[in-house]
Length: 169
Image (cartoon, rainbow, N blue to C red):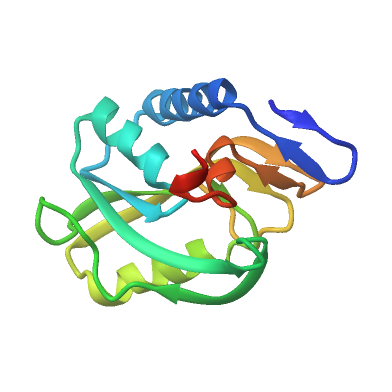
């Protein structure tokens, strides 16, 4: 998937991105594991979580996290986790599928899973699903579409909006 540029970068088109989300959803479905809520990590997991919520007919919860803020989102800083989770289905409970676009260092997934254990006693089980799993990660996601042994920098199609403003549209 994607086009490698030879300098440690992987470029993903919109079509590839949409097919990847669908393929990941098929993988989770074929596993037979059923979950009660999808919890996506914003911003990267928003689109993936939205599709999963629609396909699996489960409520979508959103947790904002951020570690890539400097240099137009290309340099990792301290991890920030929002104080609350947004959901119309009430507090998290039952089986939760934690969704993001990728696992890079793995620190975000690791900290969020610990956060859920500490703050949501009604959560019975948490599994994770990502499109891309980089070799440099300290976490192994439960579901992933593509393992990247060289841990390239992934250029996703929506990143085109990072460097423009509405007046440039």
